[in-house]
Image 1 (cartoon, rainbow, N blue to C red):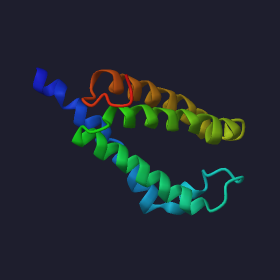
Image 2: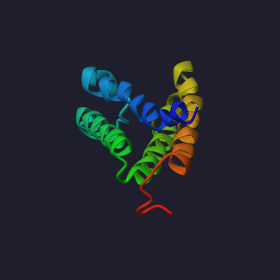
Image 3: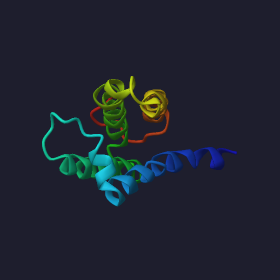
Image 4: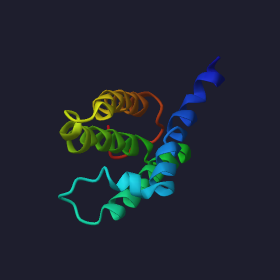
Length: 123
């Protein structure tokens, strides 16, 4: 049973590969989510894809994985306020994304607390 439960340490971060694929495979779609106050939306789309990939690698390797998980939770939480909340009145999909992102933030924090191995920089 413990071996099956230990798979979660790897399956959870690997699930974020979907977002990496979307950021690099369909960059125009991701760029539409970048707030208009920021210049160069394609840059921010690719930059975000690289950061998500760094989170995945960090978790799989087990170096700075707690820090990466907390920073990823902060990023997803900020996306609620920067991207989805302003658009929620007009888009039912963005309203759903608010709740989905809250679940992801919770899962990332639980992952940081119980599944990570490297506690540097974060208690």
